[in-house]
Picture 1: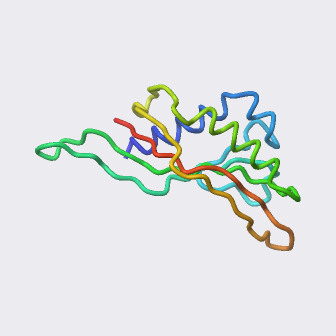
Picture 2 (picture 1 turned 180 degrees about the vertical axis):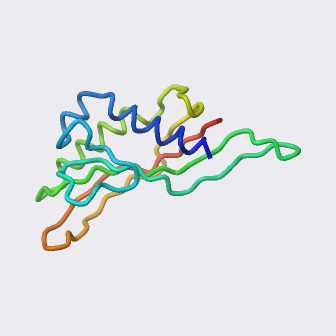
Length: 141
């Protein structure tokens, strides 16, 4: 399980460590694991590990783990421009990033597989626009 922790920590620290990106967010800490807290100010980013799988070798030796991670920029703007700008900067940081090790493991590779975007209704009225990508991230514990 530490592989998914390594992946989420790596994505978070990579995004949070970039001043160009954090300047586009409501606050420097507007990056959340899975979902933003109720009432969070926009714009913000969510990191959601969607699918994980192990790659095993002969004898059940785990070689690495793969995860599909959705990174979304969420805004309450009237257009997608702000969400797209944030998603583009996040993609610049994540896609093709070099190998990185943290306390939970090593991230071996990160590539974007899909671009995503959508509109969600906000309880009580209004809309949230979001844009981002689904990344294939490989790691080892």
